[in-house]
Length: 292
Image (cartoon, rainbow, N blue to C red; front, side, top):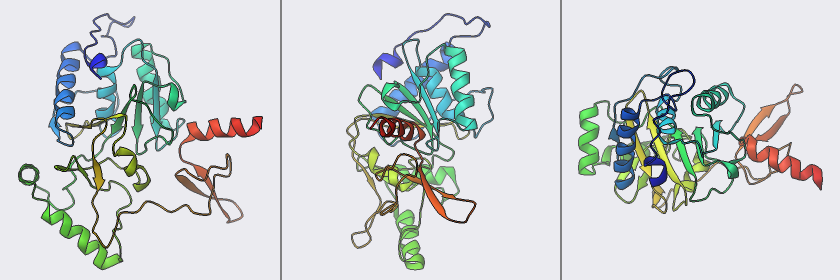
């Protein structure tokens, strides 16, 4: 990350705007805030969120991180719920490629920067890669407390009693914790953090990962991070352990993968089929399957 943060890019693009669109002062501010976020894993760092040519709520937080770190030597991958071809992913990828003149890819292993919404890639990622997550609501305590001042106090004091009570009431009502996405996690045994709306399937990938995870919420003006090799544990009770989605007995109809997060597809005849959520990995597996 230090190589990305120390990158100074002052040249103007052909259209007259600064390299990677954001001005250098804004980039420096975001980089400084990211360094603080990395130094205090799970802590939400306020920052001056800038205006971008996309609407707030469509990934401006993640996009500002990407534009602040990207350099001419980088390779970019952008996904939306695992898909490289969604409207959000395509438009962000085209915009960054245009203002930073960097190559793009759909192959996770080839990317140095990966910006994502609602998913973590299925493929193993190395310490040379950075995963940037778009975050709509960064505050993990929002479900139990509406006041921003009060949530700040609760984080400072480590007072998470009300969230634990919320999870307990969920178990009493449904027999298990029913949270499907944004499952709260404890980072470095200190801060409870919102991992963004990733499914429970992706939560274990945060623990002791080789990858640097950066989270950006543009509308809420918050940045936070999980550095490599950090303890990240989902909240659970001794008698009600955390569990991921169960895809036992199911596989991708296209590539045959049985170890991936699957999207359910209802066919015209009413039957149900399944496809990999991660289209990049599915494409790679399908090509390998054709060569066999």
